Figure 1 (tube, helix red, strand yellow):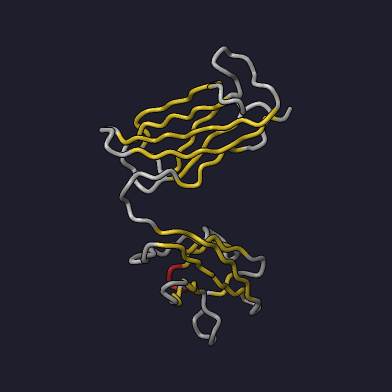
Figure 2 (cartoon, helix red, strand yellow; figure 1 turned 45 degrees about the vertical axis):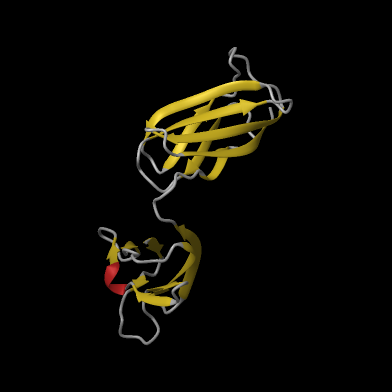
Amino acid sequence: LIVRLSDQSGINTSTVGVGHRLEARISDPDETIDLSNYYRSDLDTYRSGEVRYPLTDLPEGRHTVTVRAWDIQNNSSQAEIAFEVRTAGALEVLRPMNVPDPFAERTTFTFQRVSTDPIDVEVRIYSVAGRLLQTLSETGIVDRFVQLPWDGRDREGDRVANGVYFYRISARNIDGSQHAEAIGKLAVVR
């Protein structure tokens, strides 16, 4: 868990006041964690800093974390974020999308995955009629956040026309024993 904090009047990290500690509340299991001792101020300022706390032994599934902090004038603020814990197992293409969408000149196909084992990725872009317009591929990717850029051109080098298109992302591990796919659509607007 990494939390960036800033406040003009300063961050309260004192644990003397009851209920005024820097804390995180994790759902499932319902647990409150005192983060006060994990806060580190930025160099030469009391107005901003960072918390780094290792979240371990969370069960697989969807969770939320709510962080609450106080400034030195006893004003509190909180933020919440949802996240998902997955075990490294079968190859999956998680949250596939292209950014930006719609796009005018270029876009980037992205997805997430759990493992850092090398994979080969292929993105095929199709017209609504099912005609293959372009194939993008990259091998040996080890990133968990995978990105493949596209310049909006077909196999002949021409820009594709305004409209809606479909894409298929295929990921395969190096030895070919695992394979995953995802299908999506995108729009070109100039």
